[in-house]
Image 1: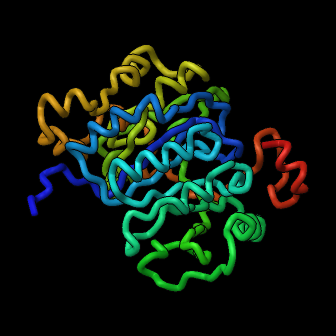
Image 2 (image 1 turned 180 degrees about the horizontal axis):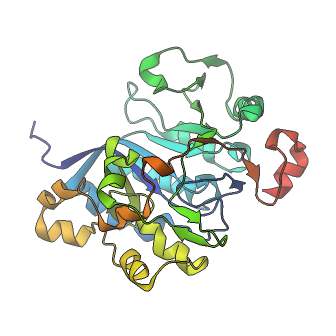
Length: 314
């Protein structure tokens, strides 16, 4: 068997939408604000096919925003699975499992090898008080006999994991505490960015420490927020200097054309510090705070909203 010479990345998150139906203070992709824009799978399918010729990925995640609000979510799951030949985790807030037509069938259809796990759902529970609601939604979504997963090898550190008789899984992580996001407010209450020592911010960046990379609009990024700064600034003008605005717009991701022309050796710099690292918090700013996720324009926990009203709001 020929050795796979592709550049190997441990984990990549495919960010496919800015849109989210929840309001979670300090969301690190700024989805707690009204942030428009999503990516249609057909617009990026050929680009990812080219990427897969050069780059392999151990662990693939689809997220947003709320990925289940992307109208082409089923195509994203099927397409990425077929291209990289690996199961996909869909990281969701859990409110739309039963409002996404075809989702279960899409997960069920992935079976390239009986020994390989299927595509699966990961739910970030942003309100501990709503855990029971999410578990009940998952049980409605799953089919037949449902078991609690106890095999730590396939739990991936989840607080709870459920498996149905068809091999479809839903995992739960309680994530109701967030660090400060890069988008913050100044003394006048205006939206702005941090202005820190980039080396210090980079040193304490979770994306760097976890070797967690990002595909956004067909480009490969070491950082999740940096590619979104210009787009967010267009929709919610930031109170930043003209020099800083030039800097956020100067950010350059890795493109498939660039890697095809120069080779995958250029990806060896993917962990290097960026000048845009200055816009992220440093330890003095990283206040770990409990959040209370609510639906957009609502102030009460999700579990307190009647099911019929919840479906209408979404």
